[in-house]
View 1 (cartoon, rainbow, N blue to C red):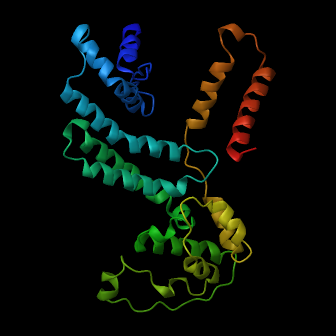
View 2: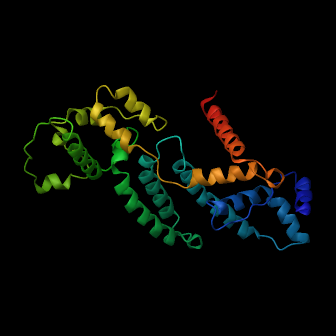
View 3: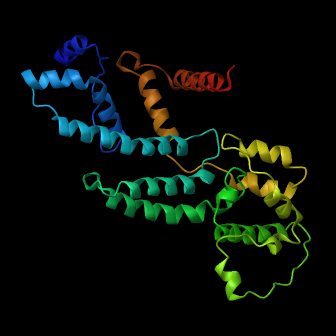
Length: 284
């Protein structure tokens, strides 16, 4: 380690403590590669003198692998949030990652085929769980396929019928040509008799940076029943991240030199830490 630091001084590269790849730690492979890439020249000089280090071909593979893994870290961070809706984003993130993996199928060394098979299983489960949250999120409902939108609308019609008086619409005859276009357009009559649904599907799409819960708060007066359903379904994807973060933070509070802190003191310190993070997030 001291030699690597000295070589970094010679090559004028920033020294980083190399990270280990841990099987049970998310994205640790990417962290390992990122910690080494900025010190490439220094490591190459060490290869000439002391240790067997990556060859030029292996360095190219290291960089390619880091580029390939980066979207997975981004997706992990987006889905691990604990202060905003994540369930409505899950299906789209999985789809985007599947497209990303498909483009890299030729890179067999990365095990992309196995990753695609696992992603397909996740996508199937998430599509069912996130159908209503995705539709009720004004950022994403227009990007859904017509088939998924129709399924979501029919489910919402059932829920709305329990709270509101609706007009029964006689279904029109479906021809083979209607079925052929089913995946490309949404039937305008699908929401008739449900004014809140009609109003929602006709509203303008919001940007990705918008807060869907705030959007529903603003539009609640016009769509009160739909807003109540949205509040119920626009939640966060179940994740162990907050729990793991709490254990990790507690490990920095209760140390060998502070092993006699009582539980009230630990709780106060942890809550103060979370409060300060919240104040930074809101700019207070």
